[in-house]
Length: 322
Ligand code: UFG
Image 1 (cartoon, rainbow, N blue to C red):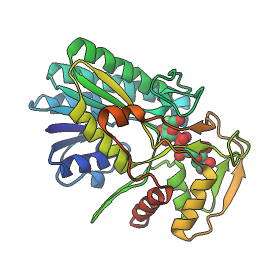
Image 2 (image 1 turned 120 degrees about the horizontal axis):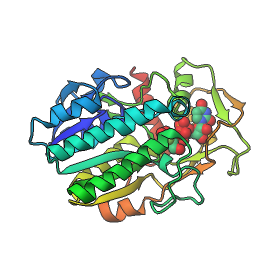
Image 3 (image 1 turned 135 degrees about the horizontal axis):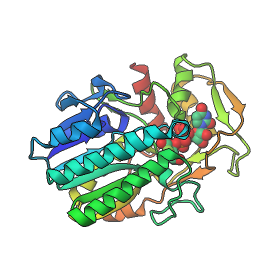
Image 4 (image 1 turned 180 degrees about the vertical axis):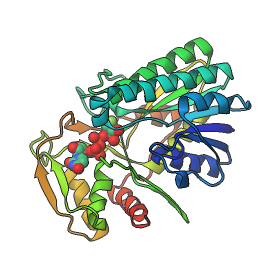
């Protein structure tokens, strides 16, 4: 298939672009490099440096596209609270313009990067797709708004659409010389931060609270390997049905605590990784774990890289190579 990958210079987008190329697809990456990296774009992809809202129409006007995989987004929860305008403009408005370009140029398929943040504070775990969507920050609200737009475009205009709701994406794509992983100017995610301590660029890791209602008192998250996530995107492309918008949670169904993550990083790196207890981070739910049965049943998706040490080892391999 000929595919447009928006945000293909970012973490998840670049890994998915690499998987799509390995599977024999033709890939055009559109990215404005505001947070992505030019050298993360796989060399076999065509690269267009442009902002999403304006650029998507120009690229799709060339014709012949079988689908769009839409990763480009702002994704910092804290920033979305202090500067929500960036999320309504960069996520919602830009995605609306992408959808209009998809309609205008009759692109049949769309796979969208949605998020567990659309559910907000869950009333039960594991979280199924039928759980209430009550986001607790503008980031999650902007992704949910896009999900709603996509549903309406699937219904009215026949797009075969899929939203994949990621839980905590982690690990790296390590294949021969190709190393693609998490590289944010502002890093907020646990595993890369812990590995910065092991690499000697950070003194210690903060543990955001140890008084949560969890077995060891620290927050529990469902860490999903980025290569497993990429597999789901390829399956979503194959299974998409015209006029339908399907939503799938992507997680392993297993939760690991912050302390377990730090321990796994110590085991993988051999570094003592000093940890400092700090107050809870505002807005963190205690436990987020996915029920991914729907993806298993309907897409035939089964994550295979679910061991925490494997996820951390790949992230460490990537971090060491930087
Ligand atoms: N944490 C620490 N110390 C740190 C960083 C994180 O203790 O220095 C803890 C957090 O409190 C949380 C866990 O590690 O309990 C994971 O935190 P991350 O920031 O890595 O990930 P989140 O669970 O906050 O965020 C993820 C996605 C977001 C998405 C959110 C949905 O990365 O994009 O889930 O709630 F919005």
